[in-house]
Length: 448
Image (cartoon, rainbow, N blue to C red):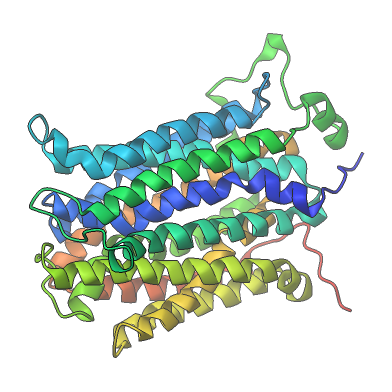
């Protein structure tokens, strides 16, 4: 029995929470390095503090996927995890930029890193079930559309989240500098608003989406999604599922490694790279107006790549239906790699917006196409756990980069952070090549 197609409105409603998730994620990506540097972190150590996020995701996502596959209560199957993650992430968003207020008890840099870990863990708790929800609710022919809608909402949320500190500082007059050991007010107020948006959009999805019951899903997929009481799934099943992952997932894992290695480099090192390479200020001079102008411009840059990603996500299902998902993803990654490399040659700050537009094509595709390919290659009853395991191929490259990235910038690049972005561009080009070797089991290409 095939799943019924959902209306466009239903697809948007069930994915609306992604707007809030990415609003918080964008604030984290664009401002975490800035916050940690305000608390005294050296550029060499930035990537080490960022390790908190992928390590947390490595642990959290498979566990959440496993348990959400086997949960059913009054809220539903995936929705209990949306709600829990949203509440915890919103608390962390409010606390992270205020870590300096705890300086009398714990060094604020470590409080900030701790809040980064809690925030990322909470975002992962909310985000992973959203990926599985598309597999639960949509038939194969609508999955690319479903993940593309998520990418669009991610883009819109990230645009506002990325631009908000710049808007507050430049157009509303909120202070963009702060005393030693404190975070500027424009960043603090942005995080408060991010917490509000996160909760609001999650509640929208909760109130406007009805999940299929386990019995309905079993009929659609001709299998049992929840085990009997006598054979309840155990956490050790994660290891068994990992060992038996489909070949398509392994192939996509290579693509994901190089893709996420690149974006982690950009998130960690973009602010010091732009401040130094384009704005001409020392990366240690974090209190200067010039450095904070560069940091605010990075928010604009991140808004551009996310905005382009949101727009391009609309076109992804059409392009993929014409040339195939693999070729679509390869072309998008190629554009992103060229965009990342072009940052090195930027003659001024405005040229960087072109670079980020190209990166936006890659980001839209990274957020949707691999999941659309993967969903057709995994058992329906294992959608949550395999989406969680697939996160390994997102967090492992970030962990590797987090361990070696800072020392490489400090010792090999002589603290020239721009070369971390050059390496990121090369990494995306490698990903663009490797995706062509992935087996897409249920790809449909139209010829008319």
